[in-house]
Length: 101
Image 1 (cartoon, helix red, strand yellow):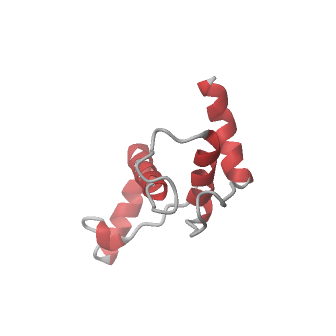
Image 2: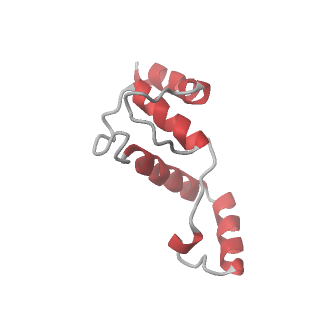
Image 3: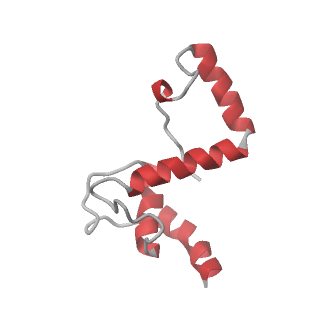
């Protein structure tokens, strides 16, 4: 999907170079870990004060496209009412809207 930037100081066992290397190997081999970390990152993006705090699970397709855009490009400080999704966010939302329908 996108690039997840992790703070090694927040991940148990990643405080050394060897620990970080082991984590990267595990991350690359474990799809479950990748999904969990992607979900954590999406929740962080949604719950920021300038986005949709407390509304995860109740976002419109446009709002989720904004979150997917920021997942891909990184968070912005733009107010929720002014932010616009890019092609990436819209493209990922298209099949999800179809599945929902």
